[in-house]
Image (tube, rainbow, N blue to C red; front, side, top):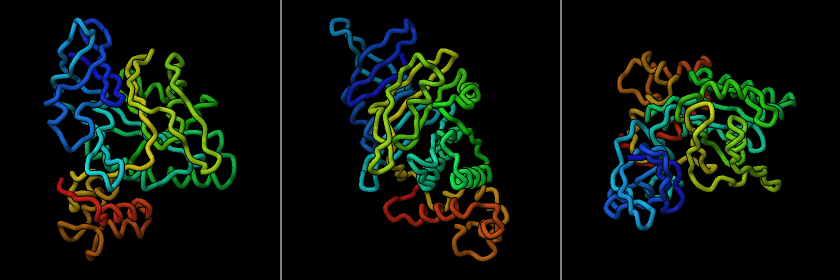
Length: 310
């Protein structure tokens, strides 16, 4: 039995529990075809059984143990298959920046919906805070914090380059399996280098033409941390498509603040769209729910490209 610590193409690296060896592995054919709904039936963080070929010094993954949770996404609305980003996670860290690259709230809300649905505790990291010196960016930061504090999310303001609040981040990661996710260019790999300088994760620059990030991490890899625990580094994401595992009338369960005020709706079920005496719509009017969160909720339930059947 072992732990999948790297996934690139059709190759996997498995860390064996009994001796700490790393074995290069592929998938057994039946396992590869077992789940046609995903591009990868095995993900970093999975616990697996392997058959070892002594002559080839390699292995074949023959079984995946039940997962406690996982993060799954569709690369685009046109894709029929979803991709499992990581499995068996204690904490997901969503890394965002207000500029270079600019934050996209719809991406944030789609990601948070997914981690709520799969019971993954999530902390939002606002990185590059040393750059937010203008009044405009300071106001943007204050508005962002207001939106997601109302939704009960913890927010860490961090600067990887200036080492601001890195110790607080390490406290949240100690002895846990963590994953960093976010758009390209938000500084995930730089953060990994900050929390454990021995990792030497590859970092990149921002595109001057589009003020957006360029991919530096091109595969999924788990690192053990010198202060205890593991961190999973992932390629930067351009978008976060939802899978077909959600039912429209239950989507509001995964927006914590919307779910909270749904208890004040007169009618049940209530989609919180057109119904009279809706507690959620009243909370939006009163400023208890951010208008951006509510509008993104409406976009998701009205998305004709996604089938919901949770």
